[in-house]
Image (tube, rainbow, N blue to C red; front, side, top):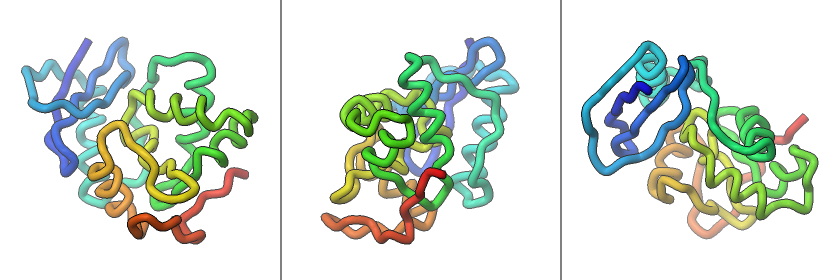
Length: 164
């Protein structure tokens, strides 16, 4: 297993890879000893480019661990482009489970590839919703992507992504 720590605008991120694939990105309180490999180095570079406003898509080889349902949700979520948002309900419909909003929300919350699988782009129908790394981080990521956030108000329709 390889590990790389990245200081970012939303705090310290721990990137870890196994078997040549990025497996997890998680916020941590402090960096420890790096044990990088080419995968974690590429992930760190791509994230630095993202935070600098120079990247909107990621190409690092990645494979998050999760159930078949979680994988389905994360795959659909990965189609939501930078600068757009989607509701939990729309994501549930996109995975063919329109009445499973809570299960979809749980899968989103368990996403191990913070930012790469853009769980910060999922919002509640009435506003911001939650985020495993905290609402300040979610606001910062959406603002970086150009999404205008109004407190306690729904998002403007121009920011919503519609699944094909």
